[in-house]
Length: 182
Image 1 (tube, helix red, strand yellow):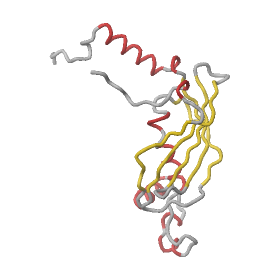
Image 2 (cartoon, rainbow, N blue to C red):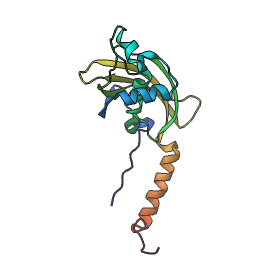
Image 3 (cartoon, rainbow, N blue to C red):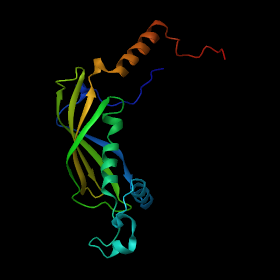
Image 4 (cartoon, rainbow, N blue to C red):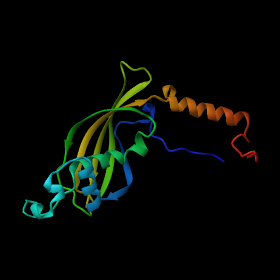
């Protein structure tokens, strides 16, 4: 039986001007917001105090923008960087043009902006990603530009493990079958 393990993209597989839609979306609950906000020790009343927030311009509590950012980036991991990332290098141009509310569904997408081989780390490359989060109505609620360092396929430690496994199964196709001995 053929097996496929979910992984991100190696440097060579990233193509600039490609948009990845990360699905499913994530409907954000009040519990998500309160848990994240208190877990990160953020005491902002705008996220926790319904009575205070009711008197503010939006008239209700808003979802913590750091939760929104973490979720749009997190939604990209399985498709883009799972097991192929070396390091998250940084974020720039982070913006929250519209609030996210309890009950909204957050949809994430990522555009590969640029890529280049690392000048100081052979076998690794730097990819610039532009993440966008939209609510269920298509309104942009968050954007962020992120740079990540990823493995080139031939240099990746994971690639070496995959090659060994492939070689072993080629030598003995039944090797992955149980032998019946406990």
